[in-house]
Amino acid sequence: MSNADFMAGLRADAEPGSHPGFDSPRVSGQPDKLLLTGATGFLGAYLLDEWLRQTGVTAYCLVRAPDTAAAQARLRLQLDRCGLWSDDRAGRIIAVPGDLARPQLGLDAAQYARLAEEIDVICHNGAWINALLSYQDLKPVNVEGTRAILRLAGEVRQKPLHYVSTLALFFGTGHTRQTLTETDVPVLDEGLRGGYKQSKWVAEQLVRNAGLAGLDTTIYRPGRILGHSHSGVNTNLQDIFCIILKACLKLGSYPAMDTVIDITPVDYISRAVVHLASSESRRTGEVFHLHNPTPVPWNQLMEMVRDLGYPLRPLPEEAWHSEVRRRSSAQAGESFFRQLRLLLRSPIYLFSPDKPLYCGEMTLNRLAEAGIVCPRVDAELLATYVGYLKDCGFITVDSNP
Ligand SMILES: NC(=O)c1ccc[n+]([C@@H]2O[C@H](COP(=O)([O-])OP(=O)(O)OC[C@H]3O[C@@H](n4cnc5c(N)ncnc54)[C@H](OP(=O)(O)O)[C@@H]3O)[C@@H](O)[C@H]2O)c1
Image (cartoon, rainbow, N blue to C red; front, side, top):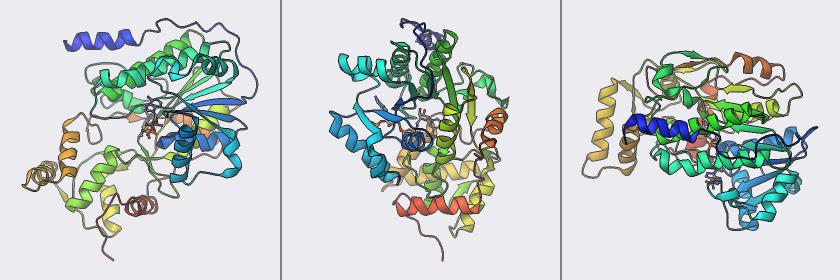
């Protein structure tokens, strides 16, 4: 298939298709029952915690599992990992075994009808995140799953939909070095490479189209989500930043680069989403940018890690990549470096000089009113992050005393 045909296919997938329309009566008043997707994931666990903390909802969590008990156990496990489980709130968490990739979300007809009738608000955060898979691989979960959620949102009663998108949608060549605000619409072009970003572009477009068709929608675009600002907890260690940090520590060197990195703690994002989603002043159709307003220069970041006691020396970029190649292809080549090489071959944007800059001033102002401020990336935050990564066994290199 030519690239042009592939792009045309993505645009066609973003068309609304058949859904019941959004002319059913709108849910009004304070929501009582929330449907949350992706609660067994990293951001999802913190979103669940914040929905329970900031609002009075009971949270129905769609979880991949064979039955309710297994779904409940998966939720409990993830909340425990994040230090968020509390017996007092257990009664407000209802596990719903299901699957975004299956028809009617993998629910039987009675359960689907009950959710369509009873749910007051939806927070769709679940997605399959994988930098190596193709659009076709990810489409059933990320695109068709979103379409199924939109259908549910319009069924019986119109439920407001809060959709977790990503700032990575702006990585197409159409936005090279631009400064982007919440009102910018991500352009699909051949520069938007990688199945994950493409599938999320289609999904956001579906949500936008549903908004234009009358559904009450809000879109949240987070930047790079990293650990909790106080505990450092991070259950998404497949993130390219974590992997590159681990590689730097193993090699004792880092690629010296003139670029900045967005590091946004998960607790800021979850607090922000739930505050904005439940605010009395919210309006339909809003878009929010949730990134760190103070991105940190990469070289400075590495110097801060070095100051924590890890021997790290700067290398010219190509020399650092040669080191990775050497470690992956030596006779006893390490599987970690082999995987890293594969990742570095796929279109990653972490180090790209063409990265756009983000401006989330409207979002920041709205959050400042509620005292929600993104933590700065400083030595203390980095020590918390590296400490957690060592405690959980992800980083095995010792620092100098
Ligand atoms: N991580 C980042 O830096 C970042 C940045 C910007 C935006 N985002 C967005 O934030 C959201 C959450 O990301 P995350 O980092 O928390 O990812 P994550 O830890 O991988 O969590 C993904 C969640 O989606 C669920 N999921 C995947 N496939 C599913 C399916 N077929 N049916 C039902 N649930 C399914 C997963 O369930 P299982 O536990 O069953 O796999 C998991 O609960 C995503 O929408 C992502 O696009 C993330």
